[in-house]
Image (cartoon, rainbow, N blue to C red; front, top):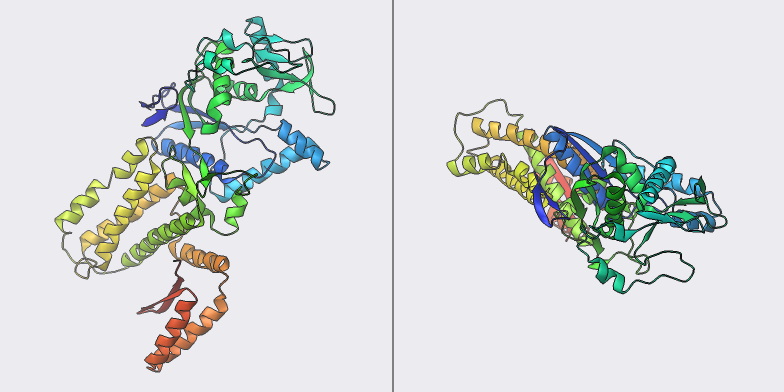
Length: 485
């Protein structure tokens, strides 16, 4: 499998450090608020990566941390007159609820910063002993950035260029403007831990170094692009300086989610939590939407994009429902598929896996799924083909392939008819459509058709159309769905 390595700016072959095993660390959330859709994207990208690697037969250990002590947590606790631990627990629970709703697998290990204070202090002491960090009279500990010759190797930034605009603020005890905090002396009223330098708490970057240390060197370290600098750059410096080994072989970063082409921001009023989205759309719709672009490409969230995702899901689930019905036939004819269909179908057999092996290209993989759907629909709609034994074999293989796809993408795995019913109900709620009224008009139309009053039937169809309802007449009776323009 090829993965784009942020450090080398190129795709590289994933070669496990330990044969058959992958150790992956992904930076988790700071638990002071509900997760937004940017968090959802990062979680989904690495969820799909874990699923894909496991399907390839690798033993994956996925570690995702919680930052459960931080200025933002403390500030929220003070605003709400709550204990900071209660705030952290509230949003850890909310994170799990949101990720469970989206079908994100739990990480194998979920360390919390507060559980690793001794490990953090041990790393600080080791760095001080090596003269790569120093304690100040007030109880802060700083990493000596110029002690690490490779600083900037991940973000490709030049230290001298960065230092040109850096200043030491009044009251700071840094020896160099680029030095960063490993340990911070506690301010009045803040949570603290006793340390060799007095009462304090860790800096953000050292937390992840201490929590990832048991699995070094990591095969993959991941997170959002916003973490490349300074967080991951600082992680590399302090970890490799302390431990004398490479932190990670591959660095994998997902791009941002924008809202209507603008950066998501509370100040702009376009901040979207996962729960905001799931109030209007089904969880699988959001999952599909976020996986419909390759993870290194930005995603622009719009209601229209979510509607497109709904239509795409419906198309696949309708095909699955029809394939399931098609396989209920008891008698089949011995006739082959046309050569062009047979060849394209055979070529698609490995296309999904090849796309996923190419830097987790979920967009391309979904394209191959729709090629399979197109071919499946074609043979089901062809009267000369749908009773063929070759079609039966194709339908069985389609269902098998989609079972594998579902396991990797976390999509298309529900009962098709149940999903389509749930989707219709979701659309009705979002569009404020009275289902009882729709059913009433449909009943009148069914009676009109029974009475052969086709003028009345057509008028009732138009009434339904005005309600955004599309009616289909089938041998089994009327079916209906909503039309989203």
